[in-house]
Image (cartoon, rainbow, N blue to C red):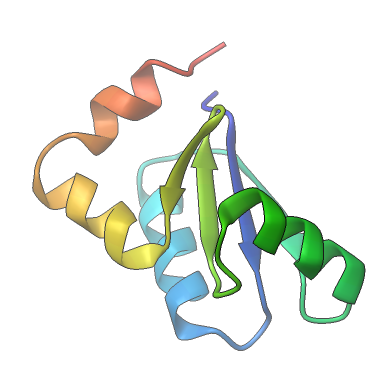
Length: 87
């Protein structure tokens, strides 16, 4: 399985879209909700250099948000990137 992690909030449409794409590819991911945990949101912001959600990592590589995830998919690069991080 790909080692993918997403920082999300419950009512974020971009978070939903990112998860839908990953689920369509049968990618298992770890979701870290930040809407009820200010300390976790600060950790996300420090790690990502951004405070918007979602923030997505594949392995140790920071992808960015939903737009960047879909851009990788449009460019045909997402599957290869996911494949580099299979256990």
